[in-house]
Length: 242
Image 1 (cartoon, rainbow, N blue to C red):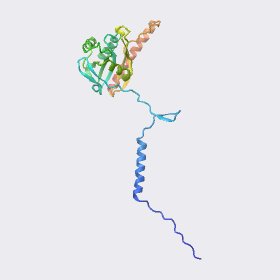
Image 2 (image 1 turned 60 degrees about the vertical axis):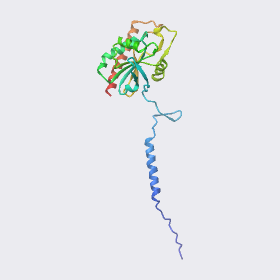
Image 3 (image 1 turned 135 degrees about the vertical axis):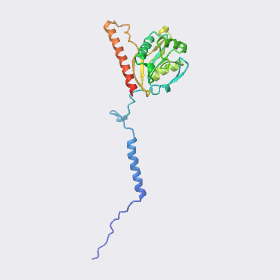
Image 4 (image 1 turned 135 degrees about the horizontal axis):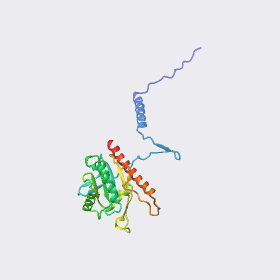
């Protein structure tokens, strides 16, 4: 009996360009896996990756005029640790804030170090001319090379405070002259990379008018200020070592 012969299927080697194509696609896929951002956490409610914001916000860009007429911008603070404050020369409370900075200027030996700056923004530039700022700064022996008093357009400085540093600054025409501007009395610490690292007490807090203040309450306010001041000095030293 004659048996029928069937040809077995034969395997054909694919062309080399096909092999190379698959290899290239594989390498691209692996590379993409490493380059894609990894979500920091998952929102369980929506299962949509949510990337957390940076730990510290960036200080805003500014360009203003110093009391000596020099133009100062954030570029002049690159690589420096600096402390920002918002004040005005006729302010009821601002001399206390400046006194805190004057004390700090002496204790950290600001004159003999190039890695720290103090930056005070006037929120009343219409009155606080460069001459007024110079007289005010001289009362606190502010080093003109290291502690700058800056002025510019009122709207610009208020926007810089409100939207840039996220602190209060506004005008209240109904208030007495020495309370004409509502503003923060905090000191803002900025690191060498331009990140706002925290806020610190510029002066000892005052009890609220309706509060029946005791000596113990006043002692607590003083202790809170002292602790904040000590922490500010500590943070400056830590940040200048990096």
